Length: 168
Image (cartoon, rainbow, N blue to C red; front, side, top):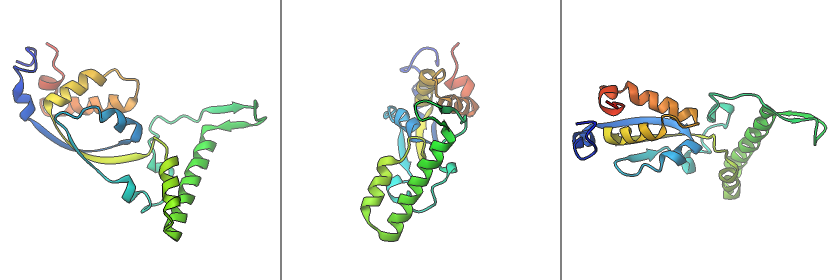
């Protein structure tokens, strides 16, 4: 029945999964293409962003490499990606602190504007095995490592290999 197609495997739409996923904003943008058969509720960036200090741990850095961005030219200095991240995080934390001190929404708005796509957001997602099968076959070879980890998680679900990833 799995191999026969979506009309013959309707039972997969009735196997529900609810999961908390923490992922960077750039990953969520791609995940949001899956609207049919999914429901998501996020920890609101708008309401939670100013509540805790902004640190390196607030961003997706699992496969981070300290790349050399400028090698003497054009700025006559070596600049590494960690230097840039330190500056970005410092600016974001300063804006957060200024907003908390003053409650002036202009600081909050600027923080939202400059917040990097690597910002980690947690969402509770409800979907089903049919949706997971669709995601798996569309994203298993994607260039983002986050999709590879998500597909590995799909494979680990009960009967994931028999129902979701089965190719027959």
